[in-house]
Length: 201
Image (cartoon, rainbow, N blue to C red; front, side, top):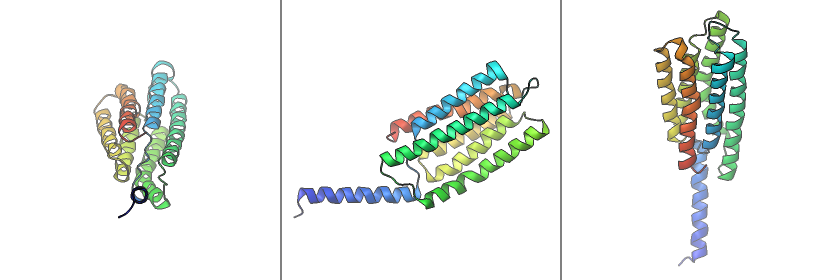
């Protein structure tokens, strides 16, 4: 009969193998608190747009300042989320293997590239009323696709972004900032809090 320490050691080996197999095919180290932080940054930027700079698609005012504000938020949010993924993967002892990184890039990059392309065309043409739809829709498509190799709430969050894009498309341009705040702000906060609670963040 195997002694108790031997059984415990075997269970530890099996747990390590299971985590390794999961990490090879799925991104389980999703940082809920980092998503919440990104959402708070988006809400702060929406407040700045609403009370100080105006929106990029506002008829009056210079769009360069609000666009720069959203560019800063994008850079900060990306840094926070990537650092959160790295920290959580180390804490959970789940390495992120190169095949998974390639799978994520193939899932995320096409829709994000399209979003950047459409944003550039919209800015250059001077017709920026569709920016909320472009941002919410392309980001939602990327997240929904990337959610296939991550935890289920990420996929559902992407679908909510797509619904927000549809809502923005059917609304007036004046409602664009509210849809942006709802999507990039509140959806990140709510789903981030759920992930932090349910997925050991």
